[in-house]
Length: 112
Image 1 (cartoon, rainbow, N blue to C red):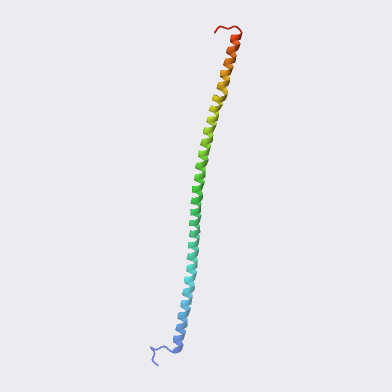
Image 2 (cartoon, helix red, strand yellow; image 1 turned 180 degrees about the horizontal axis):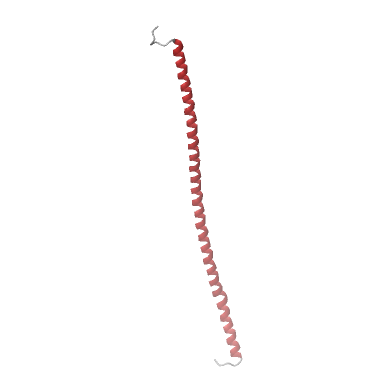
């Protein structure tokens, strides 16, 4: 045999080395893929959390605006209640009181 041609044992040893290198490379690739997948998974969870936060924020702002409208309506109603009280309670009572006072004044002999 010549010096350039490897022996069968040498070919088998090199083949074993190549198999070991491939196995190690695959293990490294698997570990890197798992790390990257974990990072992607964390990022995805953050995005889902952000989307849920935005949805809850929009819903909360909508509820706040509805409550503000309800408070404004209640304030308007209170103003209406006050005006109704004035027009339906005090003014007729004042007119009635004036009428009674005029009758008392006329009964005492007051001049018109």
